[in-house]
Length: 207
View 1: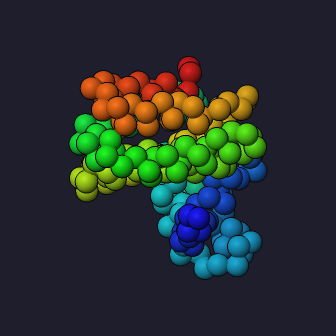
View 2: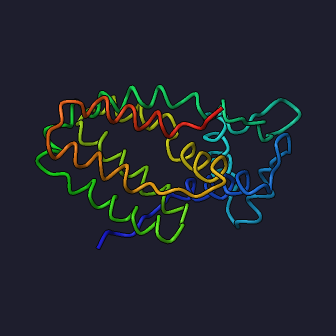
């Protein structure tokens, strides 16, 4: 059994705000008031401020002097911008991790199994969680801390959440595509780097 996922307070607050943006609680252009969130969640304003700063660095919200923090007007084109960068990073990760994952793809297989269950249940939250974990496992297997840091700085979980839950009105399965990638790693497919790059690009929102 996998250990429970433990999120920091900042991450929990970030997810709360993100849920509000995705779910329509805060509309584009609407102000997000730091002290109200702190009061609602019974926390200090410091972790709320940290969560907002992270979301601003990902261009989901914007702040201006004397105007506070507001939700950005986001489009599919905004979401799509990070995918070519992410695809390039994961292409490099696949090259560095290919041998290790051919020998032991169990971390990837665990996430694929969870994705099949998430697909069956139509659980978009679980789809996001296990899709991100699958790709993180590839990057971690590359054993390159600079690559991992660059990948994490893209806010993969946030953009995946928005792509799957906001811009994909019809639920779609995710497990099979990832199972095919595992099979490619297992058989030491020489095209694995291009396969992974193509997979990431295919997940980008259509504009």
